[in-house]
Length: 115
Image 1 (cartoon, rainbow, N blue to C red):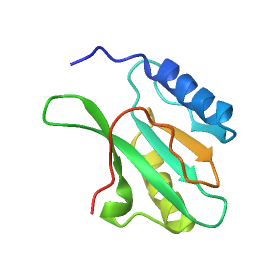
Image 2 (cartoon, helix red, strand yellow; image 1 turned 135 degrees about the vertical axis):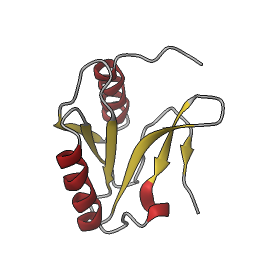
Image 3 (cartoon, one colour; image 1 turned 180 degrees about the horizontal axis):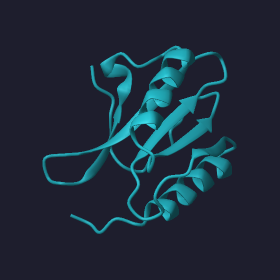
Image 4 (cartoon, rainbow, N blue to C red; image 1 turned 45 degrees about the horizontal axis):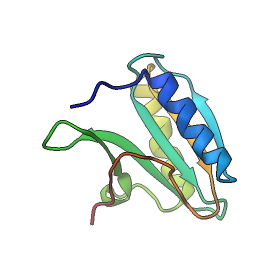
């Protein structure tokens, strides 16, 4: 298992990757700089969106889960409702929004899309 970067640095790199590729990235809620959890919203700018949250695989590596498999989205309103509930539960949560017409998440970690 690899040592994790402080959350703030990881988020700065994520937003930079998005911007270099022509998308926009925003910090909606600033969490704990070192160990805050992350909720990533990807808005496709057509009324649809996706939400991703971190998890661990069987080997202890950080992966991300697309919450579509749990019924979150694809309508942006549904994703926004989930984000609002998550923000109320966790004051140290980072909420990042990426706006990209192609729906790219720019995560370098493995993403479980679910079924």
